[in-house]
Length: 286
Ligand SMILES: C[S@@+](CC[C@H](N)C(=O)[O-])C[C@H]1O[C@@H](n2cnc3c(N)ncnc32)[C@H](O)[C@@H]1O
Image (cartoon, rainbow, N blue to C red):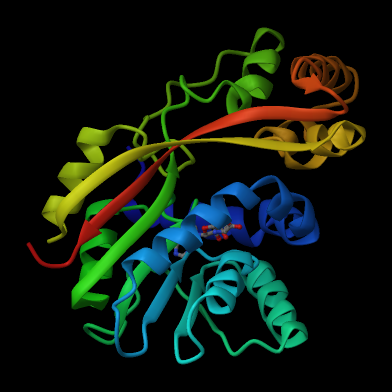
């Protein structure tokens, strides 16, 4: 079994390697595609914000900073927003965007699951798809609980299961018949679907000291222009980097199968799909 330290190293390498680089370079594409989730997260943080006093928000796994900036824009001027991420390339982009926007937000390069935040520093911990990659989720959510104020609240958007998200798995399913069978994968290993099981999420949050845990289904339509389908297949699809690494010949065959699978989502000049997610909520006390 892979140790926690090895899993951490894998995630560091992944988000500081080609995947972080491509998310950074294609941030406009990704942010437009995931805009419905940004809007919902911002609404949720607004709803949870205390009526008086400045609110202090932590954006966990903030990536290129789109949600950190959107939160700062949407909240009262005295609000503070800190984005935390392990990816150097994504944080470079986030900082450059913040400078350009003139918004007063801060970014921190750290493992959110282990960083020694000031105890009780944040009123709201928010995230769009940034909390599914912890090597030790129980320890990570307990660490985030310590960083929350006594009235602190959590609002995390995560994917539901792979089975419920056909678009996210279409590339892998199309490639599978052409490739050797991969070793069995631990469904709880860090990855997009690691928090898809609601019972597991409740158990992890309970153990981490969070209360009033709620998971609400969040099914939102996402889209991007059909003329960008090739770019998606070659750079952004969940298995794009794996396909690109195959030797020529096999790579061409697999790429064609993946392109065909995603082509089935074209409708009215757009690639359209429903992202099936959870909005996870919890409170630091009771
Ligand atoms: C799917 S991306 C989402 C990025 C961003 N929240 C967005 O919606 O654009 C996941 C992000 O989580 C970050 N991440 C992974 N493990 C992390 C950890 N232990 N601590 C902080 N960030 C982490 C990655 O570097 C990456 O930026």
